[in-house]
Length: 76
Image (tube, rainbow, N blue to C red; front, side, top):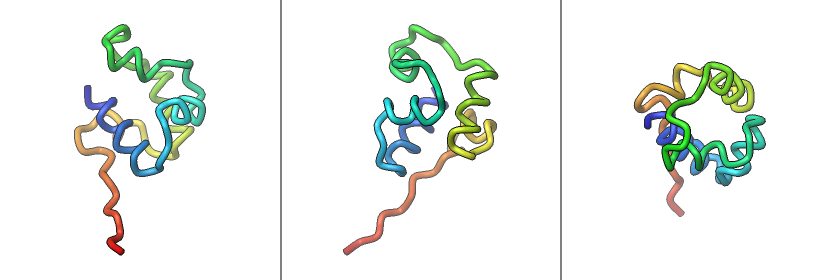
């Protein structure tokens, strides 16, 4: 699922957990896990709007492969 891949990248970039992502976007507890295990097949428009509002990233980027790109880390 493209949305899950983008959430994973976003969480890594922001150094936050899935739980913190859910809180940031006012999603239900365990929403990301439910998508991952297939309990919920897809996100609703309402959910995408919450993600957009919580992250300030347009909804289409969340459902587009490569919509969220991994930040390059500075080498020390």
